[in-house]
Amino acid sequence: MSTAKSRRDQFTEETRAALLAAATRRFATLGFAGTSLEDVAADIRATRGAVYHHFSSKRALFEAVFQDLERNANDRAAEAGALGADAWQAALLALEEFLDQCCDPVYGRIVWLEGPLALGWTAWIEAEQNFAYGLVERFIRDLRDGGHLTPVPLTTTTQLAFGMLGAAGQALAAATPEERPRIRSEYLDLIARLLTGLRA
Amino acid sequence: MSTAKSRRDQFTEETRAALLAAATRRFATLGFAGTSLEDVAADIRATRGAVYHHFSSKRALFEAVFQDLERNANDRAAEAGALGADAWQAALLALEEFLDQCCDPVYGRIVWLEGPLALGWTAWIEAEQNFAYGLVERFIRDLRDGGHLTPVPLTTTTQLAFGMLGAAGQALAAATPEERPRIRSEYLDLIARLLTGLRA
DNA sequence: GTCGGTTACATACACAACGTATGTCGTATA
DNA sequence: TATACGACATACGTTGTGTATGTAACCGAC
Image (cartoon, rainbow over all chains, first blue to last red; front, top):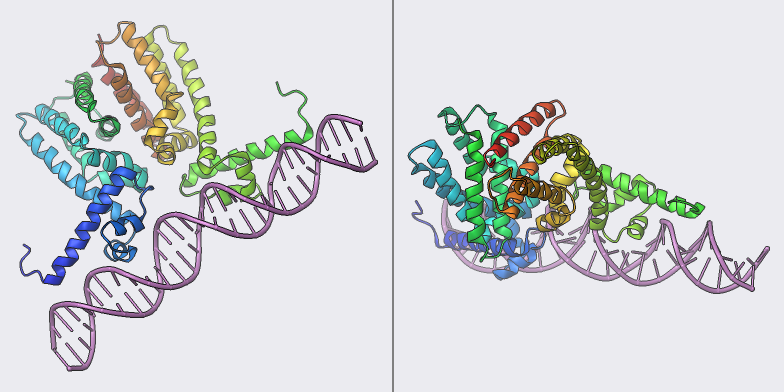
């Protein structure tokens, strides 16, 4: 993989990673609009020139942060789902893992609060096609095709389920750490019960 | 009410109303970030001075637009709900009226797409306490206290229901006019079916 | 009717942040 | 060792918000 990386290339990647880390911190605590590239650069004792060398725009920097977080979170949710015996159990396991992820304030804030804000709602949904939204769609399809659900329109059902996840994600991201366990279990219980309304 | 309004006061109110109308148009078509106060003022052949005379900030202007729309939409949803024979039917009638409102691109875009973006998610929810969110909360409480639902935590249930409405609102706001009737009926059907999962 | 105060704007300016164009220095390569 | 290129820094232009100040019209009191 990373064989024969020149000394110079190594440093380069380190500053890029440091920029991503600094941006992640600032975006998560101050939001997209509240962080200036000047400050991000200053965090790693560089200037905005460095930022614009590695990323084409402030938005592109955010997208890189966003995708890093989503890739990780989604892989874990998919893995958790894969352990389920059937499609129904798989969906619930993935849901649990998702709610756990949202308890991480960095993930919750950046992906579910700042994401739509920074990218705009439509672009955010579009980006989510590759991540949570796409994952939800697959679970819904599996449930439906496996005969677990009464017939439902795929897109609308996916959007609706995604909306519920969004509510949970935003609530957890905005909650204090002490409240999160209770809120998490309430959402899990409620969503599971709601889904029985669609059960075949 | 509006008795004894001096000629001058009348003109003043007209420019304020014109500013609101122009801002509504721009916010609905170009979004909050995409509209500059310069342009809003130019639309009514005035300058930014006029805007800042009537509204303390760009955000305050948006809030005025937002609240006008929400007040109107919410009154109509509440009226529709009042016609229901019982709490369950009232909720469904209000839901139908809400979905109708969301088919208006101005309402859908400004309240459900630009709202969280312009105000930030937390402030948006806070503003919604007086409108859709508050309305949903009352319906949930009525349903629960009327014995129509199995026991549920009020806040979380409200947030979840609100999340579903948000998904519907955003989908309808982002859809083309031709698609809206179909999407509307799909959401109505799905939400109703989901709610049966909580039924006592 | 005119005079002082207030209202409803316009004008001008300060400031922040993004993006871009250009410069510079170190390092790999021929 | 000369040269080209990559990784940044510096400097500048632009846009948009918010604020401070100016001004003309209007309204009420005498």
